[in-house]
Image (tube, rainbow, N blue to C red; front, side):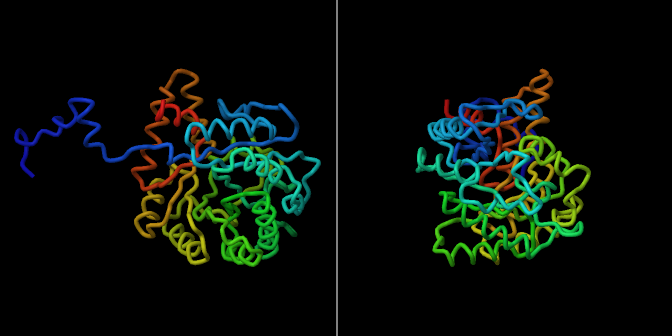
Length: 329
């Protein structure tokens, strides 16, 4: 490459149209997945105090929100249930009920918006009185017993209309077991998005506020099954196992603190790779924007481009509606 003054990198940057022509990465509405929180009741909404602009919505209002997401071109939403404390128990038994909140919400959304995807987490933490993602005995989260419950949970969610089952629990072997169970029940069409590299992160705090698991979890943590934030090679092993077990897509969670992991996963496996801009990431940016410290729209767009640059094919973000409006005004 010749040096300055023959080479002038600023030439391609000097006009808007030129910058557009040489732009390497672009964000599209096709890259967005909108996570939503659903609560019991009718015409109810509750702001999530630790997540500016985010609300919990009753099923009827969630359906209207799903229609808005459809009209903006967003391909899929992810639904997370907020379970009343009195309905939780140690084993999260409500998770396997076909009449639970998440199943009723999925059914209503798919009936109203059939041409858009619905993603459901498969994990017990919204339903357990202790806030852990699995069945606990004598202080230990049991792997095999939890997998059995997750398989049953997957079937009721798929039967309700869920298009993509997303195991977020990090139990060993759960993807293969869920795939086998879905297939045995004639649900071969249901996709699996594996939370393949899910870290034991401090960035989940606002989400746990939103679904009500923070109080249940208390001072406990999830380090015996979620990944150590210090480890990158381990993530590649986790992803490889989930792919071998039948995952159709894989996810890295959280997002921005783990851009290096997203890059390594995409480069190694060339699989559909998703990132989750988790609640703590979202709240940091939007909280600062609310105080006038940052330009909220600009930093959110920049963060999305960082995910794309790292190799993410899609991003779960609570800012999906605002981003879609900005991309396609």
